[in-house]
Structure formats: C-alpha cells, structure tokens
Image 1 (cartoon, rainbow, N blue to C red):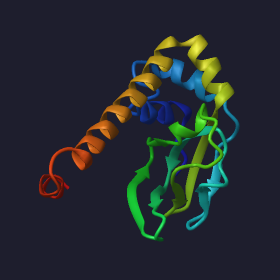
Image 2: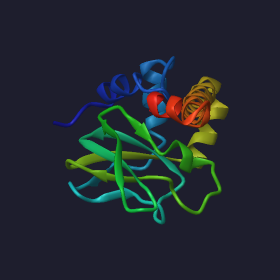
Image 3: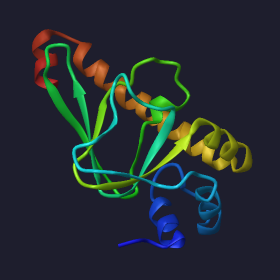
Length: 162
C-alpha cells in the first residue's frame, strides 16, 4: 500500500532525524531526495566493501543488520522496519569499509539521504543537525558502556556481565 507524502512524513517523525520538525517541514525535506529505491528480499543494501555515503530510510519492508567476525561468525544486530534509519556511520566517515552488512528480509522501499542532502538540511533546519549529533552521541555512550563492561574488572566479573 502506497503512503501519501503526509503519511510518510508522520511515520518518519518518529525517527531520530526528523524529530521536532513539523509535518510540512518533513515533507519539504523529503521532496529534496531522489525517488525511493525498491530492494528485493535477499538483496544486499550495504556491505563492508560496497556502500554509499548516505543514510538509508526504510519506508516499507524489513532490513537485517548483521555483523561478521573474523572467524566467520555472523550476528544479527538489528531488524529495521518502516520508519527506521541506518547507515549513520557511513555518511560523513572517510572509511573504506562499512562495519556491517544490511540485507532486505522482505521486499523493501528505501530512501537514500546522501551527505550533501544532510549538509543542506543541517543549514536549513539546525534541529536536524542536533538530532543527528544527539543520535551519534547516544551511540558513542552505548558503545563506551559496552567496552567498559567487557574490559573492566576480573575475568569472572566480565563473564558475569556478558
């Protein structure tokens, strides 16, 4: 079922990037993007060696975010659905590899918010920049807590916290 621009804007206002914008402002920003892309079930959206410097906004469907370890072990980190956003580490970073693999677990419709779009949005609506920075800050805090959990104290304490 196809959503109207307004319905899409309302859905996306629940995500971190569009928080505290009006529906009209959100529609205005969405109208600056390229047309949504369709990804079929099983297709890869991002992988370590193939990705673009853009956020991926899920409009419809489901994506799976997987991390692979050096020994071949794959761990599902997240399942994303309509309204979710991924790829925040890809946008402004200069890394040559993306840290996870993202694949469609259902046919999905995605929007790509490229670096230039975000830069333009930040200038036009500073709250979008604050939302993005707040999201990244929260992720850094989360990861620092994880690091502290797995590296602090005696081995038996670390095992128990794990």
